[in-house]
Figure 1 (cartoon, helix red, strand yellow):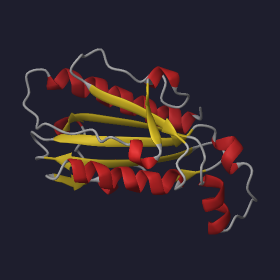
Figure 2 (cartoon, helix red, strand yellow):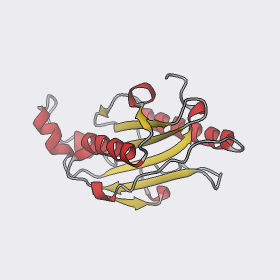
Figure 3 (cartoon, one colour):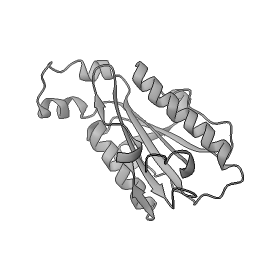
Length: 178
């Protein structure tokens, strides 16, 4: 795993753990973690993943799910479809991806995307986030030319194996940038 992705995933795990502790006794709205099977993904145990392994919470009330698969649409389109599904399943949610997530990254060292929604308010709502990563970015991105066209990138990402971590946390712990 690359340092940046490890740091990003590590920060996500730390935020999740802190949010879980904060959530004890707090009131946050119910959120729905979407069924991503329609996107060509299969539910998986997070410990069985490569990029998301080790991310867990000790709180039995924490909501964390992992998905894996090789969707035809590729990493970025699947990230966008995941966001659309989260918004459809949480009709009171607002897209806060730009405020809370990093830019999509596609290199042979790291290939990841993040999407997030806010359900409720920043003080007592919840953030539902999805972190997506290529399982083996070196094999996928490393196989294309040094100056690829958009078509080459799309072709490389089509059907590439990805992992997805979806989790819900209290908004107050994560909305400093909103």
